[in-house]
Length: 364
Image (tube, rainbow, N blue to C red):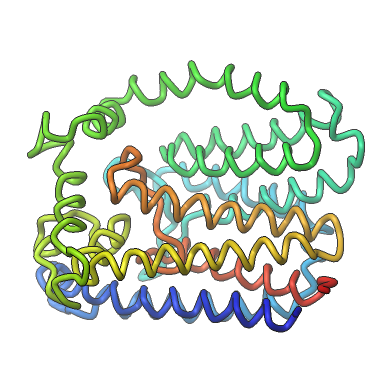
């Protein structure tokens, strides 16, 4: 059963990666030709990141995952340091008003992706160290919330609200499963609502996204444009799609077609069959992930696997929900499929860690 679970998880992930390679070329080739004079521009970069991700996956599979626990706090401090550095003009690269990346020639690195993994490792280690003290407010709940607050604060300065909400959700669920009193978590959420309200409605582009989500047709050529074009793409596909490579929305109608809205292009070109296939693959990924969590050999492996599966699951749910108009627009990529270097690499590293945990698990 151990080997079967590992093979199943790896097969599902490879299938998603292969779909991603095909759909990234399909959705970006015309845009890449228009902007860079090379229709393979984004595909070649994606394949480069894929190779780096495969190396990361292999290393994460062969190195004992329990080593992460030994360096959990160091790992978190390094992530915090990089989050500070990326905010410094001249070091961090600014794109469309957001300073989220380090750029080294043709290589981009997003430290918030490293911070996601580092914080999950730290929380898993903290839960193991505290034991029953996790139920205490000062010793069990306050320290991890402070760590979360520090990471969230620095990511918000970039700014990146979508990542902070996803990461905060993962950490709070981990703490809840660990035995933290629900009233502490509920009180934290209630106290955070005014801050979330200010973060959303005090920033014009975020407020516009919320209003566009509620009724995109109020501003069909402005804030509602992206959501409308995404829904048109999915609706145009019907059951079987218009055919691979025959999307019309990718012809400069749908922005970010190869990144945040690649699911919409899948819906247009491969239809309902294609989108349901993607959803089923993620459901199978979650199923295999739950098996790994349930049968983890130790407490650290249990909570580390829980955090990693939750992060992949939340990113997939939010991305698909945004494409369908169920959630307001958020810049979260579709795991294993969307174009995006750091996100792809750390998703694959997470996969390697999960397989590592599964390898040491005690399965019936």
